[in-house]
Amino acid sequence: MLFTQTLDLSAQAKKVDLFIDSFVRKNNFNGTILISKNGKVNYKKSFGLANFQFKVPNRVNTRYKIASITKAFTSVLILQLYEQGRIDLNKTISTYLPDYKGEAANKVKIVQLLTATSGIYNMDAGTTMESVLKNGLPQYQKPYTADEMLTKFCSGALIREPGKEFDYNNADFIILGKIIEKISGKTFQENLAEKFLKPLGMKNSGMLVQQNVIDELADTYFYRDDIKALVNDLPVYIENWYASGAMYSTVDDLLKFSDALFSKKLLKQSTLDLMFTSGLGEYGYGLWVYKDYKINGKLYTIVKRPGSIMGAQAMLFHILEDGATILMLSNTGTASLDDFSADMAKQIVH
Image (tube, rainbow, N blue to C red; front, side, top):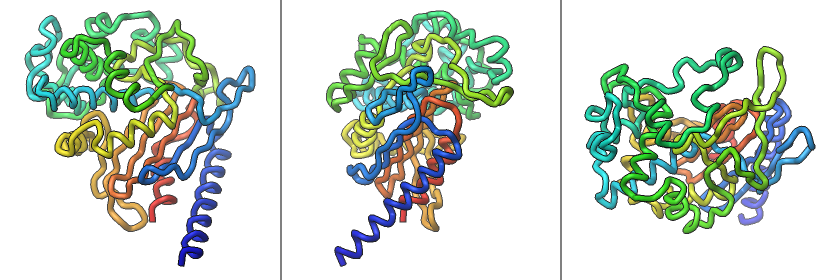
């Protein structure tokens, strides 16, 4: 029996290898992929280049910009404050940021920021590839402090009634980042270090700042449909994404965070139940939650946190009942990690 099981596992591993290799070839994927199940890493491999000009390869310890996976960290920090009784999710922004000048101050609740239902004017509204190539990204092409970002881009008018519609908005999480700083009396980076990076041993993660040189950080390139080619990412001040998307990490470090989150080391089960509530847009607290998600004929709960800023692409895909985690970090925008992770799930769940 044991010999038969070993053969089955070996055959499955080979099938996964072939599936990933085929995807990489078809999509010109550059990055690192890790698959883990119940605390055991079953697959970890890097592909392509971290720097095209000097032909530097991606490695398993390559650091990547993780874009909106940052929002998962921000959500957990807020929920830890909630568990400590230091924040009420049903209070409004002005309760914790009394100097906030936006129309949402006394109308938008913390929970509505977490669930992308604030109704605040979307700071990235109208951003298309055509507009980016023509006008750039104005809110990211000058250096702003987090306070300046809050005032200039996150204090706009309410364009809909709070709590009524899902509208994914980076402004929500910049506001949440400032609330974390206000309540804790520490910077967002200091909170990350204290709650995650140091206790979990995430030595290859942190916040990006344009003028800082980060060792082993992959350069990013995005694909332009108009010329059918990869080009260098536009010059931006990555720190302007702040608590909504300015972190960097590795697949190993993100696995430490993911394992700690899903094993209830960061939050209590009752708080996780809140975080994993699937609301409008199938969005929970800072991540997507898909209930009754069918994989190979069976139903599972999927907790998913993707990220994308130009060429930086990232995916944390967790199958709750199966204990499987798929992590993908990429420095080129050549593939849909949403499609890839969904197809990958079919290869690893049986």
